[in-house]
Amino acid sequence: MNMTEAEWCENYRPTPYVVLAASSGSVATMRLLQESKQDVMQTGPFGVSRSRKNVLAGNTLHAAAYHGQAKMIKHLCQQPGVVKAYLNSTVQEMSNKGSGPLQ
Image 1 (cartoon, rainbow, N blue to C red):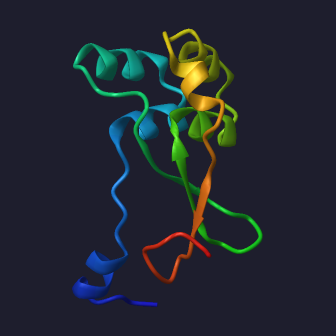
Image 2 (cartoon, one colour):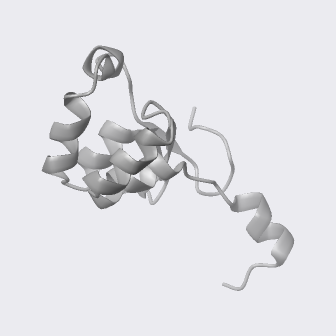
């Protein structure tokens, strides 16, 4: 399916660099981002649900876990306050057709 530029812009979901670093498992990149004062608590899209092909969005720990990045999970859990903040967080599944969360 070829999308027009307007359709592409409407469907584009930006992902914070810390979520991308967590997804890739690059602890060195995450440290660099943290040194430049990036918030590891940011959330954003990190994957696609296997059953419904919807976009999954969550925090850096969700992204690292989804992509099986054990070293990144360990790194994130060693950050002050991160584990406590993540305890009640959830992953959002967003419709791939629109921009909002599923109801």
